[in-house]
Image (cartoon, rainbow, N blue to C red; front, side):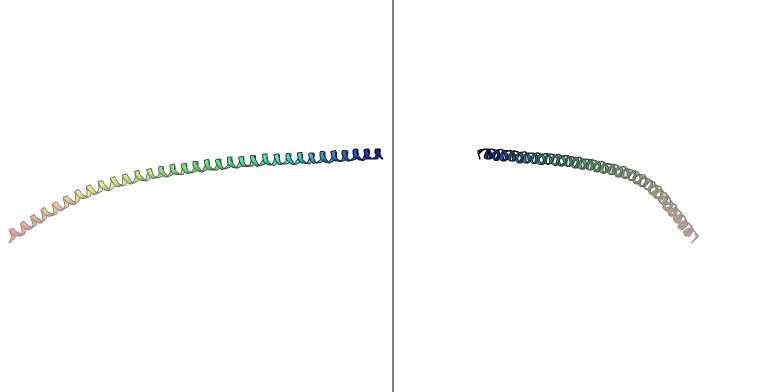
Length: 121
């Protein structure tokens, strides 16, 4: 009877040891899975941050390029406006001078004509 009890005790100890080792093995597997998933999450988060930084950098670059292009086109149009304005002012002065000369010539003719008409009377 004592041998039987001793044997049962060893069987239970052996079974308990096996169950403990199995649980320990399962726990280690779950810890490894948790560690792997955490590492994957950190890598994914880092990759996401890098992607967002790259996109932001590209957006800043594109915005700067557009601003530079706009400023260049604006400068061209301002130069064009200045040239046209200068041409217009030059033409205005020239035609103003011609008009003044024509008015003066017309007034002289009118006076001459008035004088001639008075002399004929």
